Each structure stands twice: as structure tokens, then as C-alpha cells.
Length: 93
Image 1 (tube, rainbow, N blue to C red):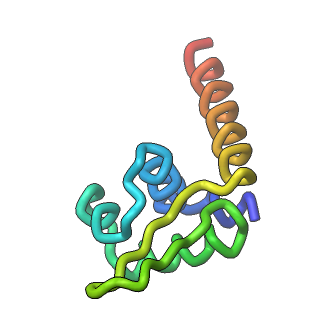
Image 2: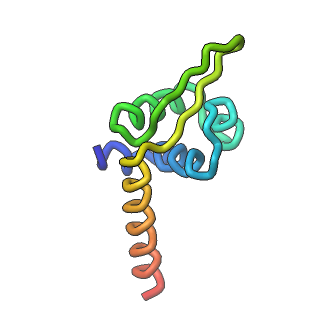
Image 3: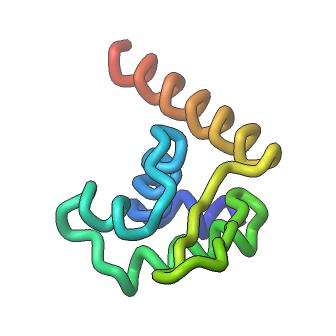
């Protein structure tokens, strides 16, 4: 699971967006140049399957879907932050 998320730059980008409060797929797609709907949907499905995100569909017209971090996702994001901090320390040494 970790390898699937970390080896894909788009997974980390999508994780960052949701952490910043961008939780609708259309807004995510517009926020990142080069991120296609196909890739975004694949990443979102994987992150939901791994338990990092939860998906909430609203019965509206037009349909609306929002993603948010699960409790596990918050812990996972904390680990990613720790790895980034460690990398920064290595880069400064």
C-alpha cells in the first residue's frame, strides 16, 4: 500500500490537495496543471480502497462527491510529513 502511494507523484499531490481542503474532484483537476480526470479518478479510487480517504456522494443534481481524510489517512499523512522532514535534514547536511 505504501509503495503504491509513494511511487506515484499524483497520489502525493492528491493527498496534499485534500489536506489543504480541496475535496471535490473538479477542483482538484483545475488546481494542478497536467492532472487528468482519468489519473485523478484512479488515484482517488486507490486512496479510498487503502483507507486513506473516505468518499461521500451527495444525492443532488448535478451529483456532487467529496473526499476527506480518514483517521488512518491523517496518521499516514503525518508519516509522509516525517519522511519529508527527514529528507530535508539529509539535504541540508
